[in-house]
Amino acid sequence: MSKAKEVENGLGQRKQMEAFERCWRPFHDSFKDNEDEVCASIVQGIRDNFAVVSRPNLDAAVSILEEIGRHNDAADLIDYAWANGNAEFWTSDDPFHREVKNERILQIIQERRRAAQPTLDFENDLRAVESLKREKLALLAAVPVERFEQLFKDSSGEELRSYIYAPLELGKVGGISDDAKRIAVKVEEALRRIANTSKLNAIRASKYGVPINTDEPD
Image (cartoon, rainbow, N blue to C red; front, side):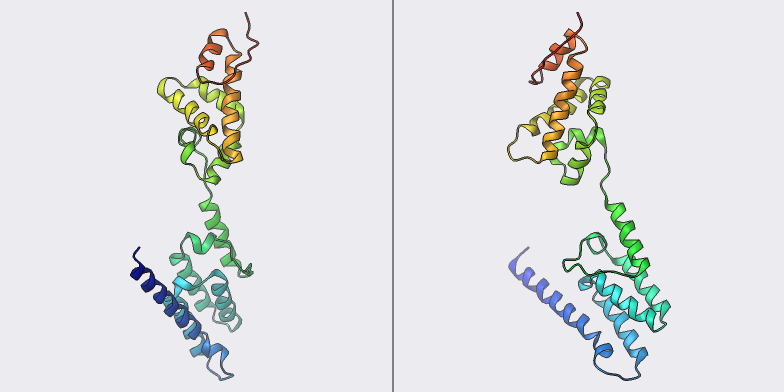
């Protein structure tokens, strides 16, 4: 992004923040009997400047609308946020630790966070282990060694090699995470277990550069 574009975006965001602050002025600045004006200003201000609205901002607006009996406006505002809020809006932690109280907003937060949770695709994740994000590595590291062992026994050819080499090569890299180390250790342990099933498999497993201490049957 060019410097000029960054400046333009920054100015645009500042204008939205100023406009959002102004939408609260009818609420804060007087004791007038202007309920319609207050509600319309808050609702429109959030819609028009949603890019700078936070979940606590939304919660505060909904709380006021509901307290004065504008339940339809409150529900419509939550609907708008549900449709237009991105993953960051719904799943990120609030930097100021502000509490959200509205039950429907809390329910949407929980649903979006569940949907954003990574899921394990064991075989493909193992082959792509070097490019996995932290959350995926944690899932893969939690897989029991028995599943690694069974996968290796059930695989062959290039597929088998890809399951083994990728995590072993990652394990050689300096400064990797504890989860990445655990994955490599489990691959090594699975190979040792397979090596102990026969002399032939001990020779096969040793090709991967893992120290094999076998107690194989004669």
